[in-house]
Length: 217
Image (tube, rainbow, N blue to C red; front, side, top):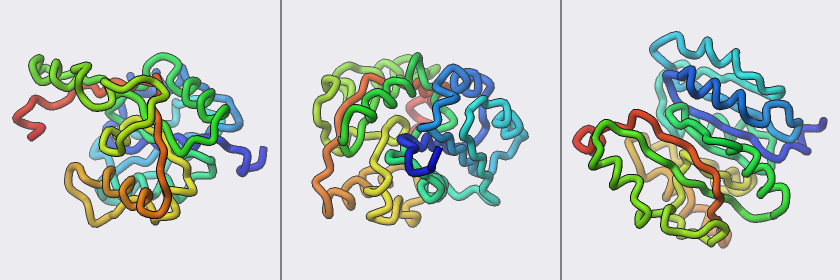
C-alpha cells in the first residue's frame, strides 16, 4: 500500500521499554496497512530495546538516538519519519488500555478533525497524589467525549494531531528540553497560524509507576 494511504503514524518515545508495554502493543491493530508504528528510543541505558523486536506490527520502525536528547528531539524525529495523515503520540512509560488504537483509527477514519486527545490514568505509590491526578474534576477528565478542548488540557502522552500541522511549525521547539512547556508551546504556535480544533476521545493510557509528589515537583 502506498505510504500516502497511511492514516496513523503512532509515535512512541522514551526509555526503559517494559514487557507490559510490549504485550499491550501486541494486542492492538498490528496488521492494518493504514497504521505505522515509529518507536524512538532516547538512548536507554539498558538492553530493554531488544524487546522492541518482539512487537508484532506489520509496519514498524525502530530508531535509537545516539545520546539522550529529551522528548522534543525524540518526537521531532518521529514526526520527520511519519507518513500518516495523523501522528498519534504516547510514551514508553504509558500502557494503552483496551482497544486504544481501534478507537483512534475509527474516529480519525470518520472525521477530518485536527486532532484528538484521550485521558491519562496514573498509578503511583503516593496514593494521595494518585487520587489528585485521577480526579474527575481535573483537566481533560471533566470534559465530555467529542467536546472541543482547551489547548492546555492536551497532553502528548495520549493525543493525535494532523501531521501537516505539526510540520507547519517545524515540530517541537528543541530549546525546551526541561520538563513541561513544550506541548502547550507547540499547540500555541500552530494555533497562531491555524484555528486548531481538538476534541476528546474515549481512549485511555495508564501512566504506571508515576513519581510521588515531591519527586515530581
